[in-house]
Image (cartoon, rainbow, N blue to C red; front, side):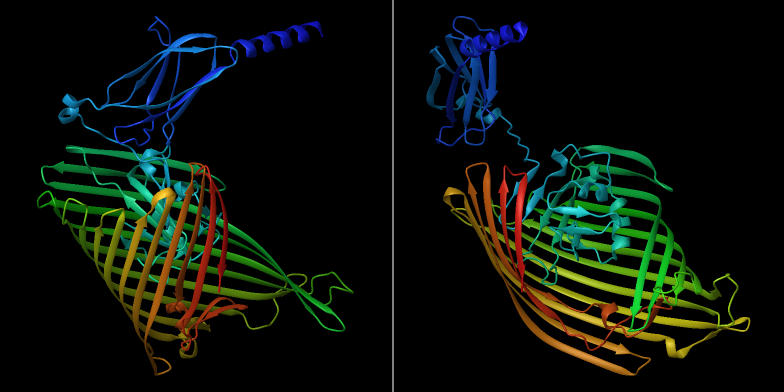
Length: 614
């Protein structure tokens, strides 16, 4: 107890002796705050380092726990003269405010100074959150799918489904190209790209008029790095993961930068093992009994993929750049699903199994997805005005073959004389996609900027389901369960946005997008043709207010469209099991949504989101 008392006395004395502090504000020659300037504290007449700190985004600093005495401060910042504040006397737990210190430029060093700056890891803008990967601790050692788990506002569940602020149907754009893949295929593509190749990721929760109007779930815009190092460099990587089953990724990248020419090559091989266990219980109740279906299933699947990307960029001059590139994404995806369904005729009076259904479903999906890209970029003036022209062509060929075998058994697991179901289904899926874009961006005076753009998209999708039943020892074509379907979609769009950064932390973004849609869907099996033509308007508005450096408020609104996709419109029957059948409706029409979001952010790290969809 006595030791505790003496400890308390010592702590009290320390607080009395070291209770002084010094604070102030550092500005540049234009009286603007200087961030990250070094503040060094010395004892008077002693040049040795005693204590120090750096200024915050408002140019403020504070040095605490200073002993009574006489001191002087040095303010150091690259390109400016060292400023010294002499004879700072502090005593008796004093807080000394030295006011505002204005730095002066070193005139004779201006021509020889090369100024470089790095962006913060997270930037919050009026219409997006920017995650600068190359400045973060995640800049190497992970693939992009793992990287997304640490991106603000993005969640990835155990099935690799991506959500932005809880919303699904996320559109992923890589270097300006919209990836038209299923969730499983997209996950494998993102796992084949290493974080060391990523420059930044833009998270757009409620996309503005700049983006396609059907991006209702948000946009992830991934920008890969451009090699700036002269000469030739590259790297190789490999990783191994062991869960229930093993998985691995390996690959390499090579970069060549010679004079005006830049060449980049990336390759990845992935071998991923996954599984899923499901249990379903369904009760069918009437006034007399409760019939229960209790089903358990096990799905094991492999995803074996190759991904290669080649890009070539040529700098015509300081303001104009032309580029061409291509990529190939190829995969095999074998599935084996086994399920057991126990049927209880009356769960109230008897909890014994009355009958059993066993199902085995094997599926093999094989796909090749090549694409080519052409782009031209031009800087039009010294203010940053730019013109960008891009063209993308994507070909996607997916062939899925499935075999379902199902039998019924009694409670003793002896097979019943109920017809044994055994059938195969071949599902070829072909897509040709052409996309052309022209964007013009013009910064104006007083923190204004405008952007205009046009986009042309043409998609042709073909699907030809071939269904065969086992009759005797042979599989026989079943025309009643087979279907050939073609879907052609053309979307022509024009948009304009206006942005402004105001005083006192305000920023706004206002936009309007107009899309004209033409569709032609044809069922060869049913001999039907449906054509549609319509024009829609999609406004957007974003307002953000930064309150000092710790708080920000964002309010945004946009109108969106959800067009029925190819699977929704195709009237084929796809059998997942005898009780699970997927079919489309060719008469579906698009639906519209008005999305409003309110976001409060604290310290650029914690966010509260409230959204409304009508």
